[in-house]
Structures are given as structure tokens and as C-alpha cells.
Amino acid sequence: MLSAGLANMLKELSYSSLNILKRGKIFLAFVLLSACGGGGGGGGGSSDPDPAAIATYTVTFSTEWSGVTFPTNYPGDRDRHFSSLVGATHNEQVIFWESGQLASEGIEKVAEDGDNSVLESEIDSAIDTGTADAVLMGDGIPDTATETELMFLVSKNYPLVSLVSMLAPSPDWFVGVSGVSLMQGGDWIDEFAIDLVAYDAGTDSGVVYYAANNDTDPQNVILPLDSLATDTDFADGVHRDDGRHVATFRFKREP
Image: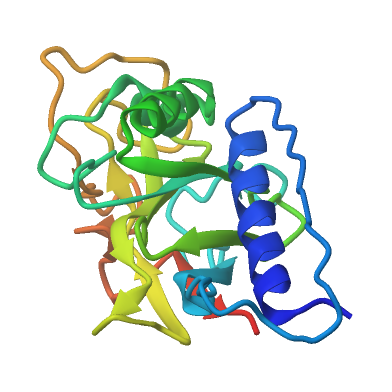
């Protein structure tokens, strides 16, 4: 049976391994355990790492987007979907996107094409500078489903989560969160939900779901999606009549 100290050490090792593998790097660890003589239990000089320094969370990404809830120019049940989730765990020293600010190339590619590769590279650069800890990658919501889940690890040194997905088809519209903390008052939050606003990335001037590419020049800032009533049902990022949100993230801490 593993001692408490060894169990915590292996948990720390697993956490580091997972994050390094997520960065696309090879990780090889050797754990050297010294045998203890008979007589006794734990050594007097060592202290166990804080077991609460690392937490496991599941985020459930769900949507009510349909031809009933958002009927104006609805793209159809066979086409409506959300692209694969992409994001990061990080600290307060980095911001990957923010309403009122210009979108990075990574956010532009997610919002316009559902392409996560550039944003992943931006996150990798933040990892290299010590402001982010891991890339988060998960499934999107296909036309045949209404929710998906992503499980991930987070640490006290990097307690913030940023996560995005393209609302598709669309010119440059997306949903997500930026710098949401999973801690409050020094403790992990057990469970909470965030209703997601639909955002316009400010990089394409299309006004309906199916719109030809029309680069916005100069680029606009990211803002909640606004449209004419004849184009979509969105006003200030939510349904213009009933305030309905197009999707939700529910974060839950796992045992």
C-alpha cells in the first residue's frame, strides 16, 4: 500500500506528465524510492505537498441552439455545430482574448474556420514564458448532439481557464470564457455555470450564418454579437426577445 507522501508525489508526477504531453513534448520520469529500514514510519524531515494544490474539473459544454430557439435564418440541424474546444489553464499575467480588444490571429482562426492550431501555438508560447500551464483540447458539439464534456487538471499557480469554440457556420462568431477563476477565497469552487454570450471576433464583416468571406479592414474589436432582426436573433450576444443564451459551460470539481 502506498504511503500518503508517495501517493501525493505520484499525483504531482501524473499532473506534470499530462501537462507536458499536452504541450507535444516527450516526458520521461524515473522515480527513485529508497528502502526504509524496519522501525518505522515516515521520516521526520519531509513534508507532503498540499493535496489541494491540484484539482480535477469537468466542464460540460451544452447548447439549446435550434430552429425553435433561434429561428431567424437558422442554418439547419445538419449544419449547426460548435467547433472543437480549445483553451488553456493560466495565471493572471496572460490574456488570450477579451471583449473590447482586438482578436489575436489564433482567436480569428477559431472564430472564422474552427481551426485551433494557431491558438494552440499562442498558448504554447505562454507556457514557455511561464504564464500558462497547459493547452486544453476537447470535442465540439456536432449537429447530432447538444452537449460534450472535457476533463482537465488545474493547479493553484494557474487557476484561470480560457476556453473557446466557433459557433458554426458563421463569418467569425464564437462562444467562450476568458480568465475564469476556479478558485474563490483560496479554495476550489465545487461547481458553477456560465451562460455563454455569442461574440463577433471583429475580423469578418459577414452578417448572416452563410456569408462569403469579407475581411474587416481595419479589424474591429471583439464584441457581443449584434445583428439586424432580419439577419439573426442575436442582439448583444443573446436572443433579442427572450434573452436566451446560445450555450453554457458548467464547471464541476471531481473528487
